[in-house]
Amino acid sequence: MVDRVRAAQSTTDRDLREGIKEFRGGYAYPEVAQAAGFPWETVKSRIRDGMIRLRDALGVSHG
Image (cartoon, rainbow, N blue to C red; front, side, top):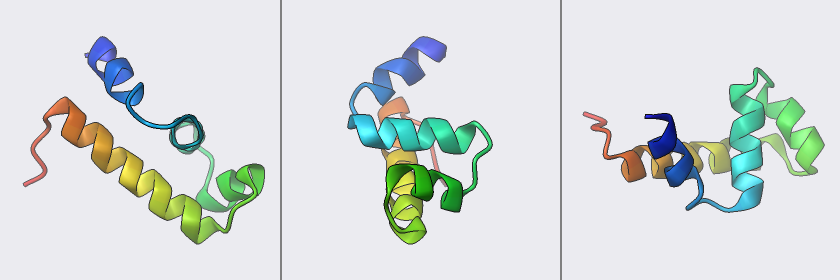
C-alpha cells in the first residue's frame, strides 16, 4: 500500500506534496499556510484537491 501511495503522490506537484505532508504531520492549515506564504483558505483548498487526487489515483471509493 505504501508503494501505491508514493506512486500516486508522484503525480502531484511538489508544493502540493509538501503541503499534504505537513498537514498529515500534525500542522494546522494556518501553520502550513504561513510556511508556504499563502492564505490559509488557499492552502486548505489545495490540500483538499490533492487528497482527492490521491484518493482517485489509488482507486479508493468515496461513497
